[in-house]
Length: 80
Image 1 (cartoon, rainbow, N blue to C red):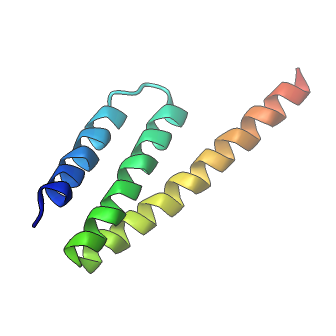
Image 2 (cartoon, helix red, strand yellow; image 1 turned 180 degrees about the horizontal axis):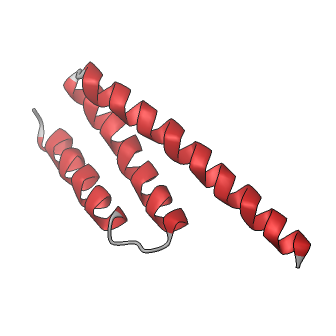
């Protein structure tokens, strides 16, 4: 494992920890999406299918909920 691969793994962990400090659900999902994307790259560099699959699934879930939050915010703005 190269220093770059290891550093990327630590960055993914740090981003995930940073995500859980967010009180706003949108910010949490955005930062965890970034963390999941980093895990996909990390998994690719390690040739680890479980990391890649989990990262992709988390990305899909967070993108779905971020889109849902955005739609709900627009709908609330229209009703005001």
